[in-house]
Amino acid sequence: MFAHLHGTLTSVDANGAVIDVNGVGFKLGMSALSVASLGAPGTTITVYTCLIMRNDAMDLYGFIDTAERELFERLISVSGVGPKVALSALSSFNSVALQQMIIDEDVKRLTSIPGLGKKTAQRMILELRGSLVALDDESYTKLAAASKSVSAQVTDALLGMGFTKREIELASVGYEGPNYSVEEHIRFALQRLGG
Image (cartoon, rainbow, N blue to C red; front, top):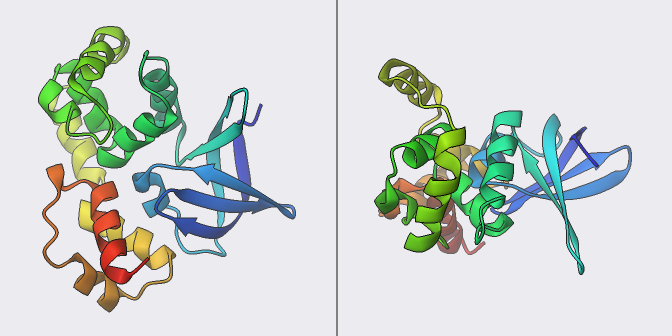
């Protein structure tokens, strides 16, 4: 129904953002990695979307690029993987790393994603690995290097929420989360910031 939204970013939090499009505010669920790359409120942005309709609700999800949206749609096609788990996966790892884990059948790293158990991770591998394209080592290294570091993504996300760099630095001291995930780091910092 909605392919993308182009408008003004009005607010962000750890779970998503609100975008004003000609006076209508659209609330989007988003991965922590996407939220981190949005910028500060007031910025004009374009976000690619996926609308999930259920009997009792309509939920709109936003993505920074079409590749992330496509991977989200593939993830939710797997039995037992709903939008919440798919966003958790995309918050824990960028889409390149997540696809590579599925191709490599890395159940251990996949089960480090909050909400994803061993059986569901195995089902994900079984159903998706044939449809994903493996990257050669050189391409993977280039894409991984092009991605922002976890701490930079966390800093960008928290700056967008209105915190100062000094507050963010103090709130991040002592963080040692699983696989150094962006989502968990943001939660850790928000708890310490009282958010």
